[in-house]
Length: 370
Image 1 (cartoon, rainbow, N blue to C red):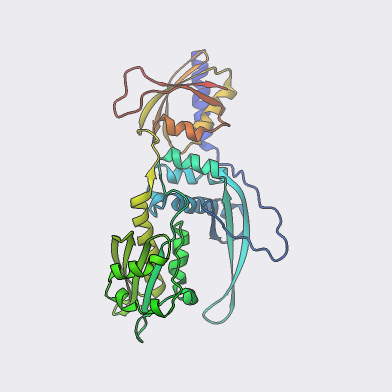
Image 2: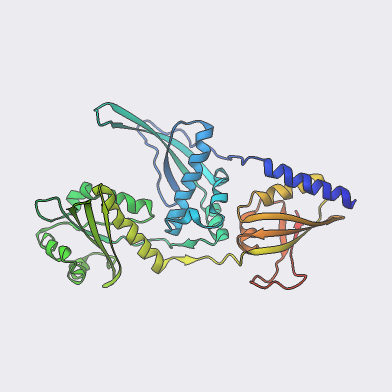
């Protein structure tokens, strides 16, 4: 019996490792004429695709989920965090619906261009569980809408960008949305236009006082001007009168230099307000699974564990009777694993070990087959 169980275990691990992730997605309901598919909210994203084929869709859904995780955490380097890349391979498992949009533009020669965009919407509860399991920081909702005080000098003198000139600041406004928040613009009346001098000399206190009519008391203050390297943007981010961050960006493209303001503001906000969800201590944990009845149970258990991105490695230890022992190398603690197993998992936790850098001899996580 011992040999038979061990054989099924190794077979299950091998087969599960070869199984390609199943994209359990559904295309959105048909839209009425004139409707345009677009991403709305923190749990939706848009990414360009080469076609509407299945091969292109899988990669696009992974990029879209990565964009959602970046918005939720506020971390622009979220893709480099442990477990995220593995989780994105199963992005289809988190999709609520997807759709496509055709965007028309014009090439430099004047010829029409067309671009296909995938619009993906993900299930909030499942994504929240993924964020918690991976131990990503969470930037709470609702998020503040800082006022953007931007002065631009294209060679004819600095001018304030107000609501009426919002297109001039489009790159920084759009980049803020990509980072998961929004920026507001001042109305741009005569009194506010007079603040250009304060912006130019980086008098953050004067700008903060003038911004007191707006809520919240946060200001992204920047000036954009021509330099030998192209364009330079100098920035200050102020929260309740305190300068949280100061930075400068030079780029040949004015739009990229301008967009850096949103990145710096997001980084400052995340550093101050984001909270990390405790998902346990990474390490290797002994797991004991009981109630195994047949080879199908082995296959289901192995597939479930290998489909969880926080599981880095599975090492069989012992199989005897209806009992299986495994060493699971986890990117989080068992609590993070349990969050990602979800309600549809073939196993459920019975008891958990004490999580920490030192594990007690003989302590293990215990599961049973449902």
